[in-house]
Length: 251
Ligand SMILES: NC(=O)c1ccc[n+]([C@@H]2O[C@H](COP(=O)([O-])OP(=O)(O)OC[C@H]3O[C@@H](n4cnc5c(N)ncnc54)[C@H](O)[C@@H]3O)[C@@H](O)[C@H]2O)c1
Image (cartoon, rainbow, N blue to C red; front, side, top):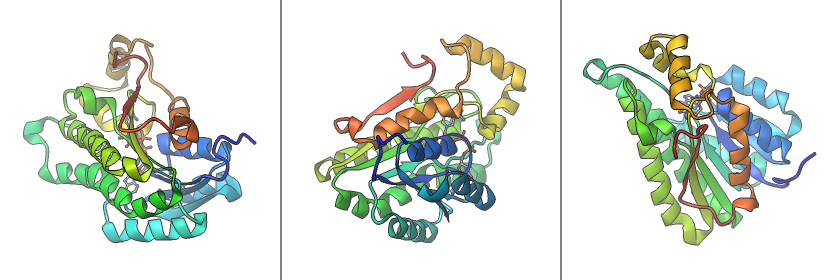
């Protein structure tokens, strides 16, 4: 087994599917012990089972403070401490601003922004105790560039980047690094609301061809290695960054 993360005790929030699932798999493959925290019970349990004894599922609604507190408590007990936290849970809702429901706005912010704050809040004492803590927040190209129909989502990811910078500066002297990862177009069902808004799969494919220098979407497995790097001691001098992994869009 590879061992870039040997002995690392890690939590991935939002790891029942898509990018988070690929990240959790990659972390376990590199020797990490990983808690999969997700609101999706069946998917989360299946994901953990597929990774063997080095992964465990803990249910968590990241928008709910009591649920996050309980998850961090259960996770750190099983892990025996905490060296890394990946805040990856996310929601996507698309639509024109003038008809976008305020309740949808609140739902997006509750998961994409409040959730990152809550998990960070309860993980901090454990990450400080580790002496080499690392937090990675999944932001998005959308948070840098925006786009039609995704104003609320873009605003939520812009907030994640600002929170990342501020928390990195706040935690630097306690040896906790904080970075965000900004994927571009990743092929998961997550984007369906935005694809519907654009007019379907073909319209999205055409946009990707024009917009992405590499000319295609990525797979979740192509995104995961950046998280491995950021969770490992190889990135010990990297903090307060928003790292793009988007096929060359941000240049
Ligand atoms: N797919 C893309 O193109 C893309 C691009 C940039 C950024 N992202 C970001 O990547 C992250 C993962 O997205 P994905 O594409 O893998 O989608 P996904 O839907 O496969 O994964 C999101 C995960 O978050 C979980 N989740 C949702 N609400 C939750 C809650 N309240 N509490 C706990 N878990 C919750 C879901 O159950 C799911 O497992 C998201 O933050 C998303 O914004 C995705």
